[in-house]
Amino acid sequence: MQRSLSILLPVRDSQATLTALVVRVLEIASELTDQLEVLIVDNGSADHTLEVAHELAVRFPQVRVVRFNARRQVEQAIRSALERATGEAILAYCGEQAVRPRNLAALRDLWAMSREADQDQGGRVAARSYPDWLIVNRRLRPRPSLRADGSGAPPPPRPNFLAKLRKFALDD
Image (cartoon, rainbow, N blue to C red; front, side, top):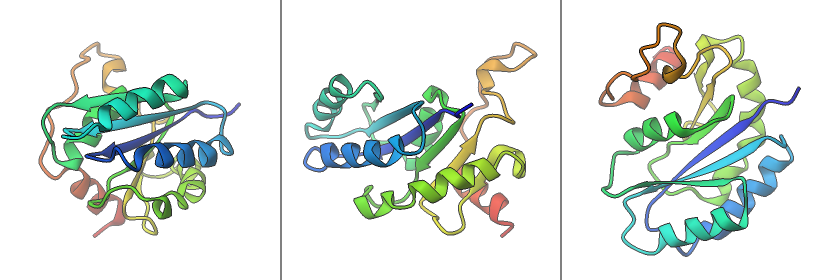
């Protein structure tokens, strides 16, 4: 049985490059799995990024849009988008720079690494070779809204969430 994959792409003021970026992500990711979603996370864009993202969502059924009216830190945007992602495996771009096509070359390796996350570190790993990406595997850890005790509220966001997660995963 094939696992489902969510790819989170935080963007800001990326109207000129977003279409090419999403098309490239879909080309690469469609080779990995048929159960795919791409979440475009608009992090308070001031240009027409949101309109382009909605056009892509209409054009490609695998694309969904998450919008934040005010700019957030990348870690906060990723954390909020993780709650909306539906894939068993999640690849989240969390670099400080905008996502570029050269960053996408890592998707195949990251997908393979996400399979290894089934056995390692509770389903979450930071990819040592790809520091701008975070891998989350939900097979071992249910979403907070699905906890057995019924307390569906996720914990409040913490500052430097991804930095702490990377530090834990890399044993720094």
